Amino acid sequence: MKYFFTGILIILALCVGLAQRLAETKTINAQNVYLRTPMALLLDSIELDLPSDGTLWSKFDGYARVSNGDVITLATHLTPYWQANDGNVSTYALDSAHFQKAFSHSRTWKVEAGKQKVYAMAHNWTDQLGTGYADVSGRLTVVFVPNEEGANIQNGLGFYIYPFDYKTPERVIKRFEVPQGSEKYFCVSYDGSHYGLTGDRIEYQFSKDTLWSSAEPHKDLGFTSVYKSRNISMQTCFERDENDSQLYLLGNKTAGNLNTKENAVYSNLVFNDSANDIIKFESFVQSKDTIIGSFDFETDVKGKLLIRTTGAASAADEGGLLLGMTNEATTHILDTAIVMQSYTQGNEKEYFSFTRLVDVIPGKEPFHIMAKRVGNNSGLLLTGEIFYQFLPAPIVSSSEDAVRVQSISLFPNPGKQVLNIKAKKPQRVSEMSVYIFDTNGRMWIEDHSAESGELLINVSQLPTALYHVVVQVDGKYTTHNYIHE
Image 1 (cartoon, rainbow, N blue to C red):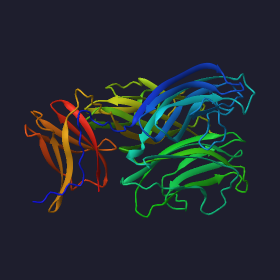
Image 2: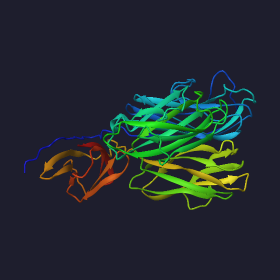
Image 3: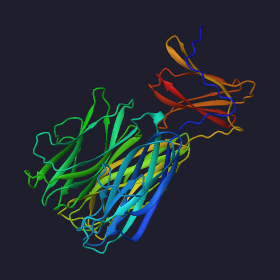
Image 4: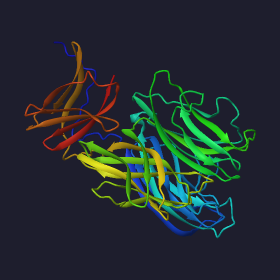
């Protein structure tokens, strides 16, 4: 047989490290802070040392309490200075009718290798009728995606629209270019602040078509009030089609003044091709801890699991809501993520979003999203989505422990393709294992060889994509990039 080598990777003493995804999270708990100052208040920050150029994604979500009459704005930036109306900017967390409610803000940046810091900040410059003091509780989460994994894995687009109306038949608020990709699905997450007039009732929908369809999933924002924002957070996924090029944010005003153009949107949308799954939930909760959504996650390698929960709460009367997550065999909320209050018939729904970044180890682990009604014994309806994404931990090799791999080569056999992995001779090998992962952390192939130090792996069935090849020899690891075409 004639061997045709299409690629050879020589590893001598030191394994060349791959640019890996990085992810960090930090709890923010700022109590009784004064926000009526010329400069925005820095709540906290996260610094990452980026190994390459890529995309940086941040999510800042939680809940806040303000003085009656004040409106505070929250945002994340790459500098410690407030940048107004720069596309992805702020999420108006509260209006003067609500003293405590959820907020959610996300954005992305194209960044270069080196140290980079993301700042979470708050400001109060709109309404100054209260004391100026506020409490802010939540999480700042930052994820870095290197360019080598593909420029379209995490793309964000911030936008501001004013004025506009809902009179056109299509009711298109914004068009988005769908990034190209090889995944079966593409997903979007959306955080926005929407403005309208008193009595306006608006529904929102993401669609690959320009025409509103009541048969497709959509979100009801409920009624708005004069120049006061209502927040909305949602996530959804679409099966990718080769003809897909546009995604549309549609709006449908079902009550209020249809002739006015006094509508505005401050929003950020993020495309993400790396969803492991998205789970929808609908649950009725009362004054005891209730599981509203669950999933089991199983992995062969350690890493981090990024879990984003978005949804809406609605009730016929005022009261409060506790939301949280647990991964233990318990019926109690161990990690309180959201505390909300003031559900009124006038507003009908309040939207929430919270993010958790948790460490996972090989094995199977359950996760539960839980809720509880407080301050009122009547029931409350929760609807929403749980999105989770696995980020494999980077494998770091030193000059002492690196596996000496002679070559990784690809050659065609009749009807199939074979990946040839050989340990460098005369290294003594008792056992050699090879694991092939995609950039989402899914393991496609696992193979083992005793003593020979060489493996021939059939890769014919792999979809076209970038893969990480992890080679383990006698407990020592090395990683390599492999592009299957």
